[in-house]
Image 1 (cartoon, rainbow, N blue to C red):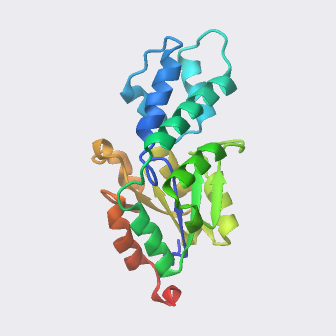
Image 2: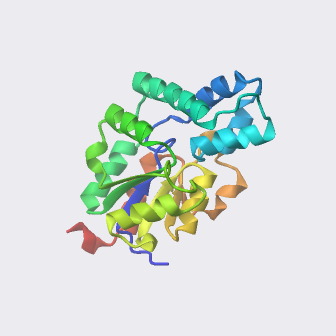
Length: 226
């Protein structure tokens, strides 16, 4: 695998914006209205999956009457958008990381399981859309993460070989997707999961995005900096 980084591809939820609590609350609110009584720990199992996959995952385990995946997924998405629009803030270190990419002359992409509605809600709320040269969602793909397609699509849109991209992820499903796409990886796990052994598959693990600029400075060839 090449170590010459020419692009950074960010996951969105839990990396650019602290939206995981919004997703978890929305999923619990909607799914538990069907009598599932899911705990926070159970909801965290599906972090990084596309929302239709989340709904299907729980229906297969705890079927409920009048199942409608699309309607249920839309209810959850509407809840998340409302919370993002009201209280969304960038994760610590995100703006500095985006500025570092710009300063280093490397391309920036976004690869997320979230829908285009969520993407635009986040980018508008945080006012960071101008940093990105490619926005890719898995919403209309045959498979979402942990399948690598959304990452491969983003690399293709940027015109950069996957092996010369570094993916920034907070979920294990996303990390698997990026590794399967032959990308280099940085895991920035949620604090309460940071000591779990599974993160060993990442090339790098950081406590927070505030440490990302220094890592990029070390990884990006000087010739790209102009």
